[in-house]
Length: 637
Ligand SMILES: [Mn+2]
Image (cartoon, rainbow, N blue to C red):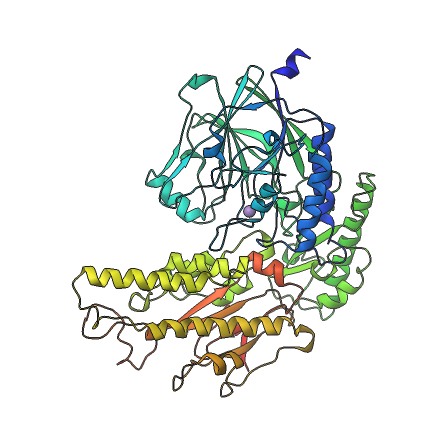
């Protein structure tokens, strides 16, 4: 067909999150089933290629099962004799330069590819470790995927497009794998991001850009404004945001279109994820495009509703002793009607999971008491895929923060991570630094570096991240002091102290991991006088380790735990240079008052990862104060 000959047909999807909740009895296969559906759609529609916007994998180091299933499905659907009908015009050694096989897979004589897959990496599956490899590189090495959009430099990004031609249509495909938002924001502001354009026929190319960043404003610089992107772009495929907004919307300032396909699996029980999930069939001919929405049929149904108790004074009177029972009955009615809806709206696809996800958010402000969620859950074990977290109690009207100067751990901790707030470790660390007193602010370990390293440590199980950062910062500081003609010997930073820092971190995480494994038996608590095993092994003789206490976290919700939270503290006061230099703000060796730094590890990722373990653990120094609306939420054991 004449028209087909010049038309690129691309299947567009993002955030497939393979392996999400793979251990869950009910939901464990969801991501694999939907990936199968997506690949089959590509095959059925005979697309030229598949374009993925990052986070194909949920875990940075996917399990063997996840990797195996992914390879199995890609081999099943992407290999075959159907010829690929477009060619690559750009220098592939630039596009795929980091690969040992720097050419597109379908042009490899040893491979028989029918559907090439192009993907950038997301924040979940980004390159880590000394070799900077990511899970996509494994697929790429196996010849099943073309990983592109990877920047070799952290100081300057030149995005070199993959240039494709099909018949008379020419496309410049730009990709940018996930970069921490704040860093990328700053790089855009400093004009360190350049999109290279082909010299020939500048205007005849269709310019497609795929990226994986925050699109909605999470913080002042914690997202990428659309206005930052070059206006010669025709279409942006925006990964990372899970809400399906796949129909291209026009940016009137930049005059390009943005399509946000959204995830193909529900990873948080928030309203955005309840929006029906789709992938796109994108057709491009010359400078014209068309995007057809294809609803996914195998996605587990998800229903969410809000109840504000105070809005029903006719039904609920907080002074009535039986009001809690009334609330519970009301909630059950709601859940039943959501289950009815789910039954009615089933798509009839045998592969669509039967048990829906149900979330009821109950605002109990106004003197009401939450009821026991445990008992409530038990009624829905066989009918709902997420029986344990159907109900979410919150108090909307009372959430105003009273003290702006003091970081309110209670509030941060209580903020439901499942509400799409995507609390990042980086943000928490940053918030801490912004609210901490000037004189105790950390200078040796920068806020950004620390935030990123901790994020890597937690999310990606990158055990060396913190150590690498500490070493890097140490060397940098030593260099800095040398340049300022300070005697190297005199000003030598106490390296031992840095080791202490590492040690402390290891103890904390070691303990954390031990307790993850003993969740059923409750929280084993170490007395302050009793040293942890790790500290016995690693502690240099004669050096006292700062004390740690495990604390039981009692949320203000009938003792129900909501979060996996790890708070650890570091005695930064011990990081100092010799007092002779006088340039360093910390002279803790003379100071009685240690500068305790407290960090929260409470990312949405960590939460997802550890929900099967202890619901909540908090490690906190005894002198740290936690409060939530002046109500103590933390008991020290
Ligand atoms: Mn993401």
